[in-house]
Image 1 (cartoon, rainbow, N blue to C red):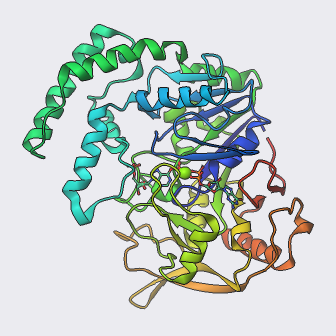
Image 2: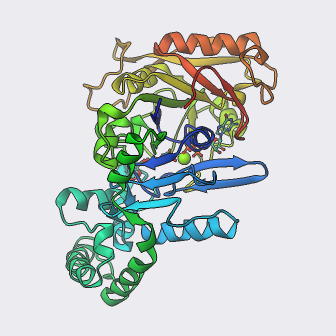
Length: 429
Ligand code: GDP
Ligand code: IMO
Ligand code: MG
């Protein structure tokens, strides 16, 4: 299959970085098409751990082209930090293996600041954003007053457009938040000088990827966040500001939807969420705490403890159905070793009404109680399992039971953070 979309089917942090890195071995291009440095994709190679925010998770494989598409919100300061961080660790990053879209919107310091001020303003009603300026930057894109990477490459144009944007943002920061304005000349100098440092990476990435596909190259699309954080399909307003699944590819990578040949979702064998918002199968007790400890569930971008709970078959089935998913990769199965029993959310309940399917018509999932089924757990450590037959019978039964619930095949299992800790079940590039 020449092109494959891999996306998160829960609330993010499903292990996309690990799986993309693994699949990247067989790919030619790895393409990000949405999100920004709110993402934190962990890749573990031997003793080395890398957390990638804006750079696609194929960068550790020499010879692959890593593309940041026009739908990504690029914070150039974070991007350049990430490039130099990788170079310091001996990873080659240059204009041959990293390409940035000229049409991607830029996240400036004022977006980050307004993100954080907005959260403060909301108080208890905050979203719990990563503070990376994502919402304000996508907001400016929709309001048609954002700047794109191509604007940074033209000093005069950048001065005009950024100057105009900052005048408005400063009025807003002062009038609404009562805070000090941004220093205009400092900001202009900072971003005008950045353009020349980005130049070697910039091109029309849409044309690049379409031509690669035509030439028979293998293209891997790397989703960030997850479907339940999708601005249209997720638990609005507790979502991010982009389309996180293959629904983001045509607009965010300028790549035809009909040429996305295979669609694969990723979900953990349990569930986590960072930030605010409903999470029906969250476990507030000792078992949630035990999952956090066993899975070391702390945010890769912000370090916040992740909220933990059980696999939500209703939400994952909804996510995978929305995207016509061919198969699911189930990660972190090893984390469940040692639990006497495992719970899985199979329906929601509200005031005596039972929802077997995801109730997207409700204003919120807040207040829904999960109906949980209990399955027997297993005690064996499965980190060394590499084939289906290596797994204890109860682990196999758990996977098969989930498969029935979500109605698509589980095409790969992950049993640890490292590259080789997978059990293939049919997925290949
Ligand atoms: P992403 O945002 O979807 O790429 O996921 P993150 O990197 O934010 O979080 C996933 C975490 O789980 C990282 O610390 C990974 O190293 C780790 N991880 C990935 N797959 C597995 C797995 O199968 N088992 C365990 N124990 N950890 C995993
Ligand atoms: P990866 O790609 C988990 C969450 C934030 C917050 C909401 C909005 O690593 O899976 P934003 O900063 O995007 O405006 O925050 O979305 N969020 C993530 N949660 N993984 C992520 O990315 C996330 N990116 C954003 O915690 O609840
Ligand atoms: Mg993450």
